[in-house]
Length: 506
Ligand code: HEM
Image (cartoon, rainbow, N blue to C red; front, side):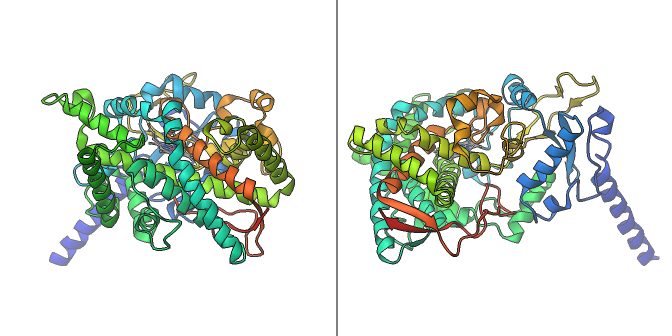
């Protein structure tokens, strides 16, 4: 009898679970929204469920399917969770800008109590995000970039001598790793105020921590899937979002540095200075309710952390991938080198002002980020019930629904970019840019949540490329894989097997 009761209880629990996992299957049908079917537990794609294919390519299949069938949107499922894929650039604009108030958050999992570093600008939501964004934006004006340029230049000089050493050793370099070290040094210097020494020291702690931040083992992939499909369940799991070693390192480094600067009255005009100013301004509001001013000073280390997290891998990947494309397109490399020589002859050396004259370089970087966007898609979540404009009155997305803007798919759409897989910086002349919709290009996102570090990233990428092209030539390595392949498991775009190149002195 007891065995029967246990069996009955197990069956009942399984049925309830099955019902829960499939109860969303008619979500889109009820709302007259074109959609793909839901496979119980898996959702619309087994590739996404098993993380065996890069999401950018899966979303591209969905985007192409929707476009071929004349749909502006496509409803899909991640496990049981419905997600709307936006497949029309006018709608992209509406969602990112015009109707931003309805779709302003990213729906990223964060937990301010257990993991204060996760309460950062990328993850924060609603009023709190808005207040913080307003306070951090002045940190990224062109004036502030100019005053930080000397720090980037110093790291570029280090990069030049590092590459000189590599040339003497034979010139075969893993460019993704070299640029990751360089950008760790840059962000370490600007966001944490320390010399990270990644280029000088093969065992530099900052670089090791940078590697750990992006490590994706099987368990982490599973936890990320749970956070994405059942956020309530994620918050019950004891697994930390951020490796505890990483958390301790960044929090300690930030706090020690703030303390040192305040004691010694050191001013470096970098991000940390600006965060200190913010902290002191907030202290001036003592006794005020932080939810009103929007800033709780305990979350400041999280902001330096997100500058590191969002800044170092994205910029370094774009620069090293650009170099790989230049190695495979020697005529484009020569044209760019001519520009660098001409501009440096005019300015005397690599100055902040000289970067503005490197317009062809900007085109090369833009074309790289078209083919290899840092985020395969821009995640959003509906914050207030949202009637899809121009659709059936039933097409109302309830708060909490996930939305994705499939950046990679749009960037590879032949309607906007003929022969889309070809690397061609001419697509980004002023004239050609004007000939296609603005929202067909989204490497930094768009609207009020556009990448806050865009200017900083461009400054860093251009400075390092200018130095490399001035002093060196890059060619493909025998060991390099081309065309480049995407790493399926990673949240930010990563290329499989790195970017090996041969580098020679000019
Ligand atoms: C090539 C380099 C970079 C690329 C391609 C890139 C790309 C992006 C993208 C696609 C987003 C999401 C935008 C959206 O949802 O609309 C984003 C957000 C963000 N990025 Fe970047 N990024 C880069 C460099 C940086 C740097 C250097 C920093 C900081 C120093 C930074 C800090 C941030 C932050 C804080 C956010 C969240 C902004 C918010 O929600 O208000 N990024 N970035």
